[in-house]
Length: 212
Image (cartoon, rainbow, N blue to C red; front, side, top):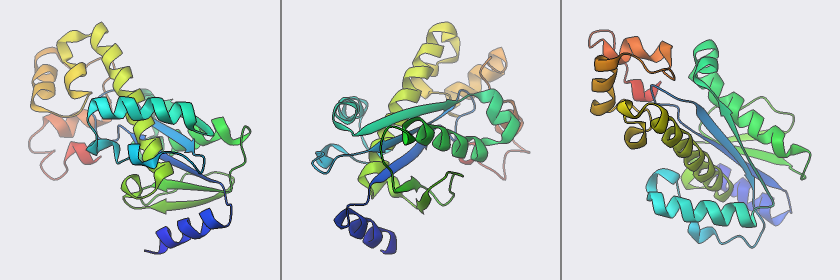
């Protein structure tokens, strides 16, 4: 594939690649989190995969290795209020941009590769790679850091509002979560712009809230 060929050529030409990905586009509650990662040439890529394909224990172990061995890494969080203000797509791109900005001045980066088909507005060349979180090591690493960080945030929210069950569903529109919303109302970390279609069977039938 074209993007993979370019990735391989860049590696051979000593081009420094950063990878970025987000976690939390689909939930009804909580933030979207993105990470940006630059890996060394000798990184043990066998520990990497699309974060969704790893178990919680595997993600935690990979996270430790990434943070220990990465040339640079950062995470950025965009909360539910900002998501409601600018929409989830723009919030995801903003989180990617902010994670990149956190490491931009600490390490040379020649190209930013991001998962998906949309690009954040940054000051270097960006390549969007569909399913990049299962193809590009730097994006895989970013996917893992974003997912583990967001899971921790949702676990902390579960301690504050345990009746919503955030520890189990992480804010995604599961049956349990929808039942708790109907029983207790939207949580204090609800994405208000998501709730009408998630809870109204007529309004929501044309669009899966998990794909917002």
